[in-house]
Image (cartoon, rainbow, N blue to C red; front, side, top):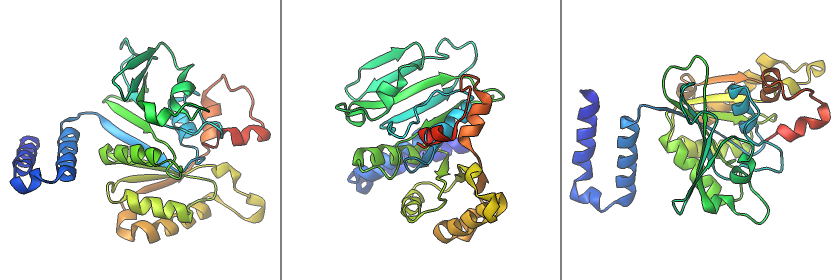
Amino acid sequence: MIKQQIISKIDEISNLPIINEKSEILSDLKRLEERINDDTFHIAVVGEFSSGKSTFINAILGKDILSHAVDETTATITRICHVNKTDERLGMCEILYYDGKTIKLEDTSQLKKYTTVQEGDNVAEKIRSVTVYVHLPYISRPITIVDTPGLNSITYKHRSITFEQVKKAHICIYVLSDKGVKESDSKILRELMDYQSEFIFIQNFIDKLNTTEGESYDAKLEFDRISLEKICGTNTMKNCYICGVSALKALCAKDDSISKLYGADYHAFNS
């Protein structure tokens, strides 16, 4: 009943003459109505390039699916859709182009070609989105996890498509690099807060703490929390979560195909 009442009010507002002249407001109202009607819970994973977003999502999936080497900048959004084990799309990928063309892949082995910046091929200008169908254990409702381009990318198109996903998401997971909360994060978060108020902050690379110099897990997270409170406000942070992880080690623990982890290989997962 409440849902229908809200939708009715949105329609009523949309039909007001003064609103009809404002395309941006109409677009926001349409997006709000779509979000209310959508039973899928949307999680946008955001952060700067090299913060480890793709590796973090791979760790959740328990499989090394999304590209994450330092020279493979994510160029378009990738939706990870949870489906039942009996779903015929399980394990498949769909590539949607801006011109309406769709390509279906039987597995994820070719994903890099369609999701990352490739020399001489502007993925962001050609591909609208990539959808990967997986099964997440212990999940009983429709969930979509969205991997987004880094928000410190020099490409306006990358920032644009990321912010569009933030507007649609029910919650954002913001991934911090090993340096913690930087000035560039501050600027990005202030922009994000115009569209999103629900955040889970992930301090990635927590295993790189220098314990011999007195660095500790609790101290690092407390320092991050204080920094984030200055940006987001104390009241906002009361409803947010922050935790420390090593996305790479978590992924290696779950994916048997990653047989060894060498220090020299560490940088290859920083994206």
